[in-house]
Amino acid sequence: MSQTFTDSQEYVASPELTEIVNIALDLEKPLIIRGEPGTGKTLLAKAAANVLGRDLLTWHVKSTTKAQDGLYVYDTVQRLNDSRFGDNDVSDISQYIKLGPLGLAFQSEQPVVVLIDEVDKADIEFPNDLLHELDAMSFLVSETGKTITAKHRPLIIITSNAEKELPDAFLRRCLFHYISFPDKSLMTEIIKVHYPDLEKNLLAQVLEAFYALRDFEGISKPPSTSELIDWISALRKSGIAPKQLQKSIPFLGVLIKKEEDLKALQQPVKKRGWSGVFRLFFIVEEPKSSGIS
Image (cartoon, rainbow, N blue to C red; front, side, top):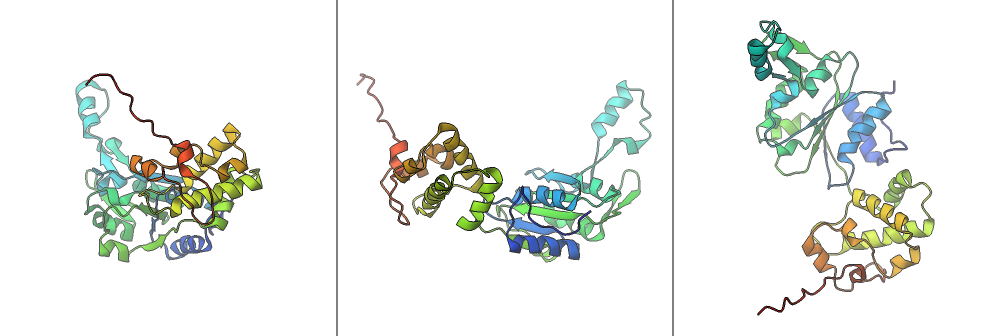
């Protein structure tokens, strides 16, 4: 079983990202990952699990999520139903304790990878409530009096979209990395993972158009990597020739997801030497008169 993270055929990581993941492994500290949407924050945990040969346990955080949910939940509703309608011995509370992702990670006989996804969606106190358990790698199940202690310290990857500031005390106990948006060279490698046989001319034109869109100052939500991958798929399925991308951007709605951004791109634009006109494939029809005054 490998204990060193590297990029793979499924996930292209920068040297800086590879390095910080391995430091997190060596120091046994949680790793906070930030970056704009589509930079592979969530996929990093899956890639790390695959490369390290570990199971992946995922904890998707919501606005109502509490820190204890990741450790365990006590299913009082099921116990009540069993006491009224079932044949189970409801005095055995342990059967109603359901371990969460962190609890399962602590109990695992083998080291695992734990993804705490979008930690900043929860209440501001959520990260602080995790501090003791992440430090001690153990927790008490108060209903049974049993303490569960980690047999192996998991690799914990925490993603954040910066919707809320994380507490300083929490940050001090974690490592941090910001995934910068890929440049053309790294993006080329990412595209090759998904489309290894992509025509060179089409790849060049796709990248030119894509980065021209991202550089355009009039849009509030530039297209991300995942949208680029979808766009290439649309281009290939429709048989668009590379030279057509020199004049226009077809299927603009695959790349741009906000109405105001689409409107901003209706004007002819020239960026970075690219001569394409955005408006050709996004035509807003004038509303037809209903004949009623």
